[in-house]
Length: 163
Image 1 (cartoon, rainbow, N blue to C red):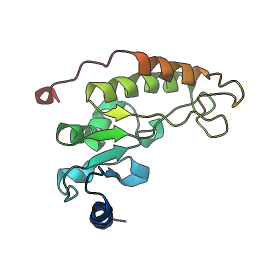
Image 2 (image 1 turned 90 degrees about the vertical axis):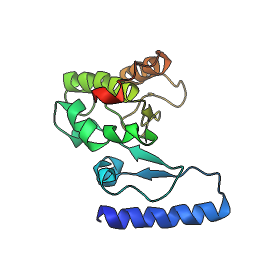
Image 3 (image 1 turned 45 degrees about the horizontal axis):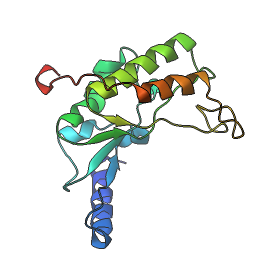
């Protein structure tokens, strides 16, 4: 599906939602399983009071990630609310050192751009899993890292002029 088709579907849905609730703030996902917001540069959704969504998993781009994230979705946070409604990593998938580097870089990057984030997922049966059991809710190593990140002071924002 092209961005223009996706944008029109979202604009139609926003109109329908707002017909029932004008106060709702719709979230519009990017292309490529919600990762890519690059088309916003030339063709943003024609609606006010909306936010945009990204899912920046480590496999979406090769390293170095931050410059690619800036090109693919980070730039949008200058003009629009952006939230990473899903991202994650797991020692069960991929290289442990790469995952650790990704974990540090993605949380720092999102914070520095003022992009809110939610991880996927605190569930022992879906991966990447951040708890090991429904009985104990014991955190996995990845779950501990992300829980600690959620309790940190936010990273300083990078001024727009420096991006």
